Length: 152
Image (cartoon, rainbow, N blue to C red):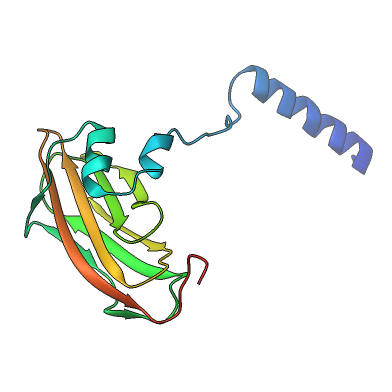
């Protein structure tokens, strides 16, 4: 029977073999456009991302509360059934940075995300779908915040 020291020694050898064979996961790093998270308006954001002028569409859906009791954790859902979606974005108009979240989407998954955003004050929240053909579609919803989340 193996004792603890021998077991740890064998485990270390197996881990070293797996690492040299490339079987252990590598560190994952998010790649994002830092400038996109610094802009103050939707028009400036679209220019930064190299996208066209957004058009309002009933094919893009945004869900969220009409009144958020705590601006630090506002649940938002974005979805569309349209094919060819490349990115889904969540924008909060009156936040210090208009871009709250950006998600890369492929045809292998449903273009349906849910997240929580931080809102400092009542504002319009936009769901933006960037399409493979270059179109940019959006939907908006007004969310009223009773307790501020961005320093309030």
